[in-house]
Image 1: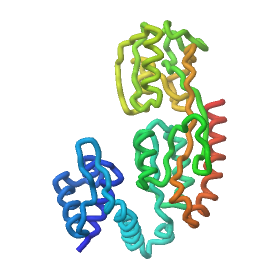
Image 2: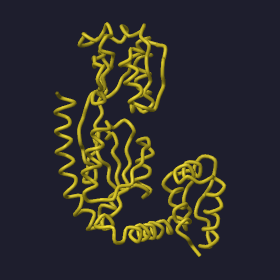
Image 3: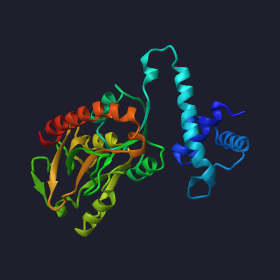
Length: 298
């Protein structure tokens, strides 16, 4: 008999794209997860995943079983929430985000969406979030929009420049702009979540700037705090500013990013979802305009 644990394990592998990450997310050992998925495959009478070293993909049977598993999990969640008030009536929205979205802004987005949806939130890279949308593993993602990317299921929120951040006590803090060459003696801090990481490296290499790195981190907060501490300097979207750092422009370093919501059209096509989104999306766009005015333009 198929159990809820089977469904939970199957969906964890689908959403994580990896047995290792799925086991970590649902807090079981990888052998236990593999055994559970194998049991499910035996019960349904077909392999559900194609396994190789590079990636985990759904088989044809797995693709057909996925919507059934989603429906079953929604049913389990509804049963869990029965009698607990109207929260159980909200449909689940699986929301993904890149890690470099400012926390305060993402808090606003999540709060507005939570009025109409029960949120399940995950973090990943832009490419992995887009793949999850196309694969039906996410319903919506907050990502950097690509040049010319528009359409009914692409909601632009705000645009901002990339700048160099230095500590308030840094000798360059009072300058509006500096040449790339002026940064050659500086110690850098690398934000591994930066969308322009490779392009930034090529930019400074082209100008013969090969700095020493004091820190390479996935945490934007840690990187900016080390800048505030005077440990080094870093490039980042202007909206990530914290107390103790100031932005300066680097001549020729003209990267900009536009953040927006990327929505699964098949999920949005459901009448209930469109009705709820028609309330949430305009509120998010208004909040984004206020954010840009206060934190980016201001």
